[in-house]
Length: 207
Image 1 (spheres, rainbow, N blue to C red):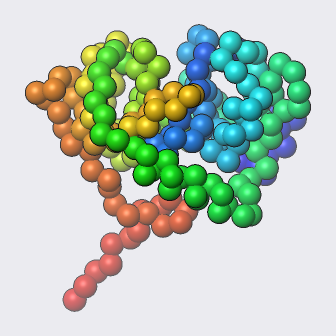
Image 2 (tube, rainbow, N blue to C red):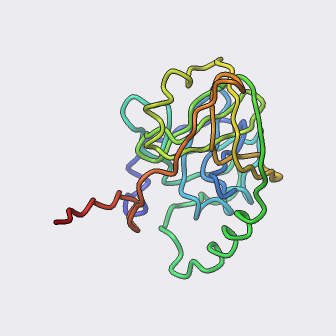
């Protein structure tokens, strides 16, 4: 949403509880004390991590999807220093591509379990993962969320298996299996292939 003038958007203030990571280990959000989720695009991640720390005050300008306690941020302003503004992804994304490949290679098989703190969302409010009470996060594709609705209730006990990455800013798993116990796991598939805009490819009919 780098095309939006942030000065026209409402401002939300709060204190950072923890950062959120995507499945590639990139920072793409944070949670404020009180539970408000803030999503920002991964290309803002490094700047946010450099400027903001857990326990620090921040001011957020962004838009809130209907019916979701989440803000899709256009700016993230630390207590001191200039605001970090979403100006769109860099034209040369090679450094980010390299970092993503390295992070993917560093992922290892990982099992986690614990009580669900809250679900996590994408920029339009779509469910894209979960956060456990101990701060570990798990990510899955949006198409899987509908089938997981019965599991994703705050306080529910969850067992998650997948490929995980532990960083100095948190631990995140790409979910492969999830359930209420190790004996009741359901498989999460990768879903249909997507084009460069994130939209599913249309099926072609054959004679």
